[in-house]
Length: 128
Image (cartoon, rainbow, N blue to C red; front, side, top):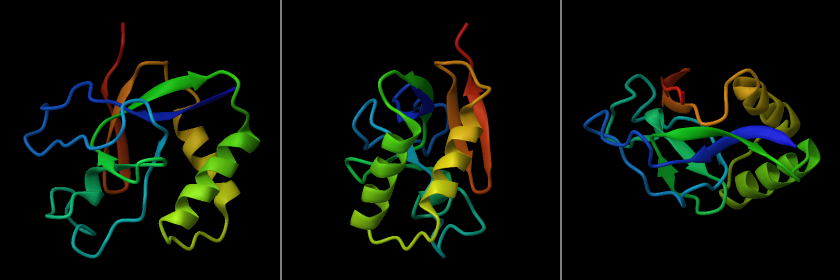
């Protein structure tokens, strides 16, 4: 089992430029930020504040921490690798990327809702 980030509509509307185009519950990652949003998470593209869906290839500004039973680290790496390749990203070390995403949420409780603002990921809401 792994603890990872999944797309959620929870807390949407907290910021006036929130968006949620992912499939609820799909695995998400933090894709590289484009030139338009590089210095401004509220830039016109939205990638500076979004999590990218591994299945839908859409995005959301909110992600939830979930323990995924029946999914191993190797499974997670395979899914991540497949998705980033499908989307045309050239990631040299997908294993390291996967580990950084898994480490990011390792100590957070299931149900915590996170937001992404350029190089920062912060808890938006903790579940009681």
